[in-house]
Image (tube, rainbow over all chains, first blue to last red):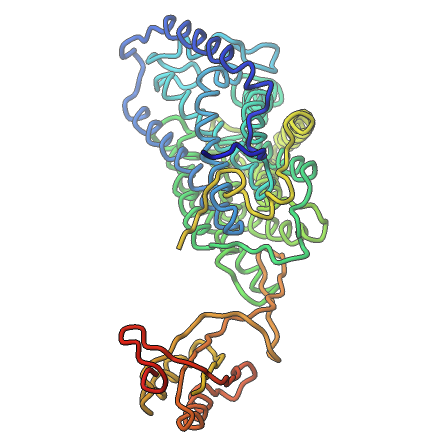
Length: 450
Length: 112
């Protein structure tokens, strides 16, 4: 018989004691909800082309999270490859459930004071095949699931900051709390009828603030609280499989067409525009990153090209449906250079945001949000607004306010969540577990057996 | 009987193998190894973080030879592995007590 040893993964005692009670309550809750769901048939106003594109886009965005798992998995040491991939994969599973239970209604339910959605759609009650309130040509269920995939990838992005040292049980609790207390509210503010979208008038086409700035601020907060990896900047902590990282970046780029072009919520001109700006900015940023390091260090790296591509995808995200393809080139060039500078500064500052979530998603996301305030044009999208370069400085101000609000809220609430977890179950694995690696210490398996 | 152990550059391996086969050496073992000598290491940069890679990858070949063939084998390896650049590697010679061919149980020089 295997002896159950005291490992960092163990379920805390207070959870074990109440486990049967919790399961009973949870099961009863699900039965109650399922009795209240009556799905109507095909409703009027549904456009089949829009619906087909949104469903495909949802699947594309889903693939980004395993893509991110490979992107991050290749960057860590081989003893942490499964632990790192597991972060993204388990978040895909956890948030998928949280989203249909209460995440969606908190983000998109009827607005309460501009800050949070009401509980009308708790457990997807009343979310059926009729048109979605915010997307009148597609079924409410399709819109809900598309948004769910955004809720999935956002906490997965954060995991790059605490890679190679986070306790698995802490990650599970963090994911549930962060999705509920940070993602859903911020998503509501920007897209769900909350104060940033309706009162401030900031533009965020596909998630520059909601996804990228939000996750990056949570990431740097987590990196500071959990501390540096053992041996950081003292021993060689090098990526163990860059081809895996490149594969992950390719999947991210592919999935990003669903992320950005899908955010049009219709299958037409706007989706086509976002598709083109997305591809253009990714390419421009990959090239500008490679040129920057070629000039600065003498060699263009494969790791740099794929990092640049992701930085460009991040930066174009808020702008994708509001700017022209020529502006997308400029946004991409800026993203490659700014993010390259940011990752070069990281080792000098001394915090260990291990996989550069702040350097790529924070800097790229902030640049993208501000660039939307510069380059947006109603000639491109009449439903948008003009930016500073098109004679409207107020949009730039709105972008600054939206970014600042996201930074402050995400930073403070993430800090509280992490502190509470640290005081209860603990955030970080024991030193010997960190040395052995997360694969063996947290999951009892190894990625590579010869 | 002697054991010849040589640390060489990767790209000279095929050259060394061919040269040894040409003088009648019938077997060898190779291992991928890492180490440093006068060549020292080199720098690698990942997203702006610099690492000094102190151990460089090399190939180590091991060849068991009879005493009378030793000098010829040393000369051949030295010639075939040499580029003239720093980091060409080294050749080490050990005395070897016993050799056993597992299939037949033969011992000594006829087992080499």
